[in-house]
Image (tube, rainbow, N blue to C red):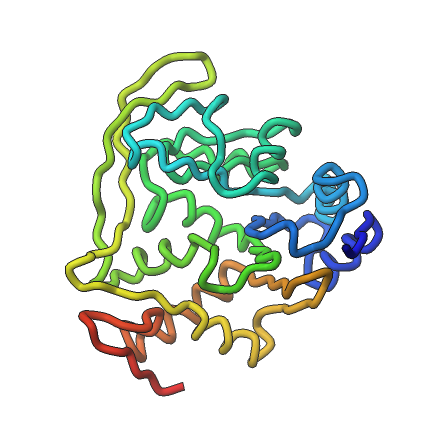
Length: 260
């Protein structure tokens, strides 16, 4: 198995455009990097040092608690999207928001401002992702392709107003940092299954890579990518203007054909 150390990770992050002062959001399959000397601690230290004191790191800590009829506890509910995300919230001076399905945790000067959104919105106007967009957060897709992660796409579909998604209320209870139990409503932009939309984000991903708007690096056992939030928004909106189903492979049982 390939052995990875702090120095080689710093080189990878640099190749992906991670710089001092930048806020990054990590989506990834960590085994794709290889065997990291020092484990997640080394990975986080390399990433933290790459962004510096003025930057920040955000990780998804999605629990989908309300969709499963569970209480969401901001301090105790485990993330379902990877071991690193649980390591992150257990071992760093993080802040985590009260979103019961799509929570996020982060570290950094401006990160608390970004993720502490208590309006019950994850996607669309006035949502946490709108703040991520405003700060032009750099998304890291480590060892995954465009169709395997990056929930920001749902925000873009919601913001644009695609016909195959709609807002749905999820109700339940959350436990805050003071141990208080609160009733909460979370609003999410969900797929309209009557239209049977089959996503294909790889189409826009290939376009971005071909036109050098996304960075790509080979490292360890995988292909790793990065893209800035504002670039992704601008290009997705352009493509949706040309074809409202651009991010789909099929809709209503019919294959989506686009002019590349």
